Image (tube, rainbow, N blue to C red):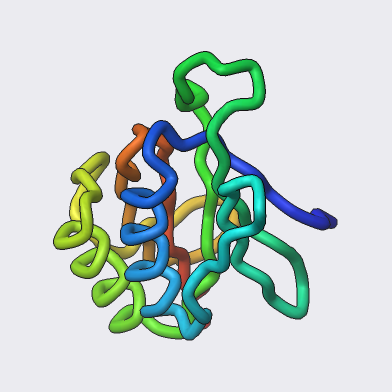
Length: 126
């Protein structure tokens, strides 16, 4: 459905450290910078990117917005969460764990990145 997701970052290098750590736990390679100072994470199914806002204003997070990353196990979700906390992330929502609802049984963990964006690791339980 998506070709890419790009989010604003006030400090792209600090955000890269955070995303290299959490996305590394999900098996992705470190981000790469382009000539404009943007950082890109390339996968077979899409691109995730970090940039300073083009308008020159501070980056801000979307209230009610969450970017979810797919995980392959509860253990991977826990490693993702731990890596994020040691690399500039902040706790938000409940501790990592099982949530049940209309979309089934999920194992989730949430963090705020260095710019305040809410991110999640999600494993769909069988």
